[in-house]
Image 1: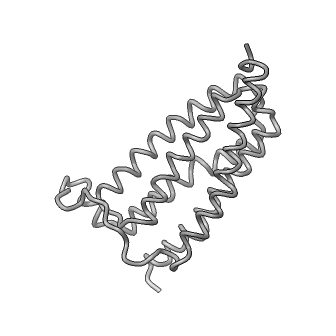
Image 2: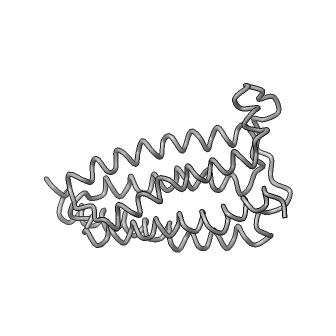
Length: 189
């Protein structure tokens, strides 16, 4: 097995599931801290935004060949994600208790995307060289991958997993916060 295959498997079977599990633990912490009555819908929407900011690059890397365009999108969303993550913690820390469990979940949620993009860069080192040398000719399009990473059904299993541990919990959080706000007004007013 090639080193790149080992690194791809590390991404698919360790880092991507860990990111989902960390997000689920983070959601459980938000629920335990009664986010709907403390920091409310504003923070909950920040969480959903951060999920999209990492979820979109993950999906692109699973569906398309990594080229300069895909790397630029990944880097752009990584920087945006970190900005929103800082904004989120600064906002939430004044409104509710952030427990040690939530802090640990945040550690994973902040570092795993950096680790994943780093491994993607190592696997696709010639593309990184094209990116930094501005040799972008023929590198700015979406090219579907020839064969699915992890086998034909991996993406479906991963999407089901993500839906269960990442999308459904945060949709529930948004709805819970919206219902609270409609019934009681914005929290901390």
